[in-house]
Image: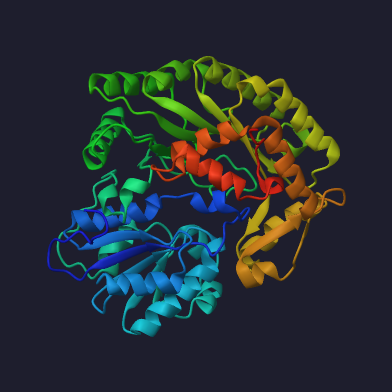
Amino acid sequence: MSGLIARSGGLAPVLFVSAGLLQPKKRDHPLARRQLYLNYGALGLASLCSLNGIETALVHGEHENPEQLVARLHQQGRLRLATQVMLSMPSFYALEWAQRFCAAVKALDPRIRIVLGGRWVTNPDKAWLKERMPHVDLIVQGAGEDAMAHLLGFSGQWQAPAHCGLDHSLVENFQRYQPSVETSRGCGRGCAFCEERAMPLTDLKTPARIVKELHTLIDVYGDQSVRPYFQSSYLVPKRKWADELANAIQAAGINIAWRCESRVDSVKPNAVPGLVAAGMKVIDLGLESASLLQLERMQKADKPQRYLDAASKLLETCASHGIWVKVNVLLYGGETAQTLDETQRWLDAHAQYLKGVSVGPVVVYGPPSHSEEFLGELAEFGARPVEVSSAEERGVTQVHLSAEINQEQAEIESIRLSRRYMTQDDYFDLKRFSYYPRDYSEEQFRRDVADCDPQRLPFRQSA
């Protein structure tokens, strides 16, 4: 039941909290504050706790004032001395929110134990993070599944079946969130900007396992109106797997549209018909650039032209099967008017296949011990930090891309390029599918658009 801690067993309760943001990490306007990001990593750990009879729930900080959230959780009886707080920090952008949240918890009762996780934040430099999170009792690095039993002092037989699935009912007000189905982990493709560049890709879940999880979603949400995100760093479906998934989903009588993410050279066109038959409606594709030079600098592809040729075939195939294609573009170190023009001309030639384009400049994450090497690589292309001290202070470093394109100009170009290919209706369709609250209406959206500075919106407004 939403809003309450799932009760079972007699062990100390565990409250998972996904750290929120004091302001959106890209552009702060009403539309950005509407977005919801389900922390499916934290939900996976909460689901394991529940499976093992431990009282648990997951609360998302979103953009709620951290002190007010602590007061609310205490008033609701979910934050008390016996509670162990598992704080998940999915991004360095959440650092200040997490600092204030932990301070408020300890001010309430210093005996409440706080354990901090979130491998992208905790892995780079534990000592640096501990200095900035003095109220945290323990910092856990890496994935948490193997450590949970020890962290909780669990003395029985800990059940941790592979791919146990996500219990979305543990999420506070779960009906607001579109659900997730984790399909694989890792990447290992070596892109210079990616945290998972050296993490091997795991096998996709079996179609039977995915069908079982979709049935669970239908039971929890009460119907088939959900629009799950098939979570993976990039989906690499073979035609055989796609066809088997389509057959299994159709045999089960499931009619759910879903979304996924992949590389433009990792989904073969011959797998697309099966994916469509299985319910795929939206695909986010990490194109990143159409400049051969920038693709080489990113280490995105050994043979950039072959990479772009594969992208052309996939976009055309997806569009011909009615799939909404959203392309991600990364403005990278060394970007110039010429490299931007190369990407724009490629996108222009493929505009008929695009539902939307998301554009943003490269950002370097982590404290100096983690970020210096990457900043050095970017410096070779002419990039430089906007603030040299930002890595040490916040773990987030914005960069001037080149002598020709500084950070301010990169932001202007990002919005301009997005707007060139995305209308207001396109933007709403894509965001409503996965990121906006499930009950967020088009009327509410249009009111929010009217309250935004139009110069900060990445789409062309309707009349």
